[in-house]
Image (cartoon, rainbow, N blue to C red):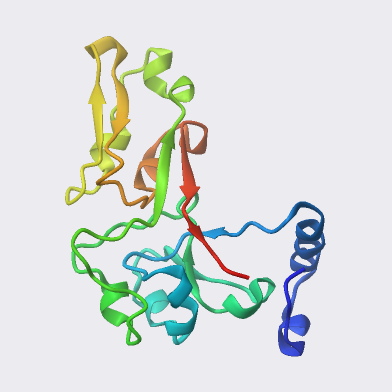
Length: 189
């Protein structure tokens, strides 16, 4: 079970307590998706000032803050691209708002997560012509292309350019059935 300060222990909700006991049996989920431009996880939690400026700067409310159940990572920013995608804004207000250097605007932008297609659940596999994931992949990235004959086109991913923003899932009519996020950052306990 995660170690909590006394203050954190009193902030825990019933669901958080149940989650902690479940993690004690199954092991904790040690992966996380950080906002765009996040530095290496080994430095992130000590560099982030927990000022919430990135959270407040996000016009799409894509950034959330980790709760008390995360122990020492409480109040650090995270994303859940499966439910609220990062919109990869051209001016990156979240990165610009970060005073600590925990978020850095680099070219190319650091990978947040990885995308995995389940082509069996893709509408194209069911005879419906769709290119929503490719169309909504940010124009600065264009990591998804439709390939194959017109009546059997399927999305393919350029893993080198994909940053894992989740916009493909956000706009996909089959959502998480057709496209999954694989978290790639390991948090240290």
